[in-house]
Image (tube, rainbow, N blue to C red; front, side, top):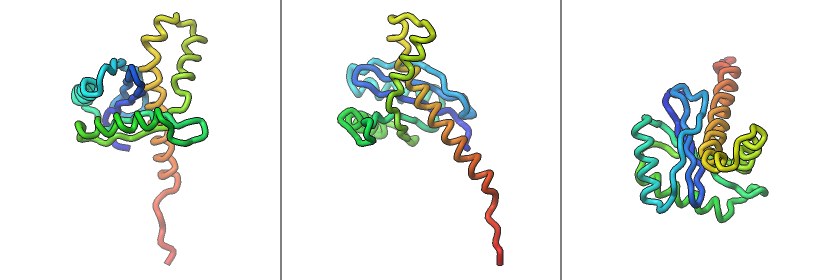
Length: 155
């Protein structure tokens, strides 16, 4: 797996949660949230973060519907990512984010985090959950490739 930071995004209609991986791509941590007053300023804020943290890949959650289809919200996210890709020179990957925000909210409630604090942190925490899932899958795929070993020629 290539080294370098990855940026995770949880794109919503009003807020975009942002997470950042460590340089080795092992751990995702909540970074910030961006108010999405308009797409142009949100894209600029993300581009600035990509440059500041020397990000090599952006991973954005794609909110598939529960039956696995691409619904209206996923279409809106895809449109935003298309605009973002026009301003970035690095790849944007998507990751199935069904129920990520719900899972984060449940964890915060169980941890006793106050409601007003949860509202401020949930978007970035959801982005971290999305990015962590992506990072874990990359490590799993790398381990499977290493376990398979080199191909041998039986002839």
